[in-house]
Length: 237
Image: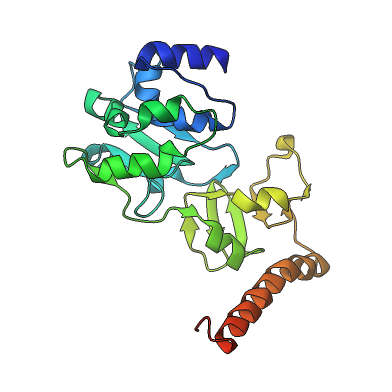
């Protein structure tokens, strides 16, 4: 981190104080900070590590790469866990249009500049063509609705209705994941992804039931809270 911070300060010309977690705020400035490393590529980007990749070609098509300067996997938002940027001066320096970017760089805590602040800068930049038309990632709501309903097969991530996503972001599942029943060397062609485990074989019925309980409990809790607020006149259905 010390080396990255020193390089960032040199390239963007302001104090940088970030730790291993809050360094996400540096992402919009990678085009400037890492300019010597990316000088021979057309695009650069950033991603998270708590993901299972599927078919990324569903996002990064020849058409989107030709037409757009910034491509995000989230609908209407910039995705910190997977976005790419055209390697050109106006895109690489877009972060400088964020009024508070120097103050953010000097804060040790995470300010999420790589998502909300950068998204606002994009919306106010008519000279930047952005693609965030469709949802390509399994988001938190889909994870909650389908705790047992995801499969990775031969490079594709799909749900039980055969709807494909470019990748699955674990997000809250990092706290509940307990088991992986295969190793990297096994190289399975197919495995199931659940809130508790990754399974290369068939999931026993007992495991399916046990994994449905937390999701069912959350649903009951939300229904109870909504009903209580409605009956006390402080809420509505």
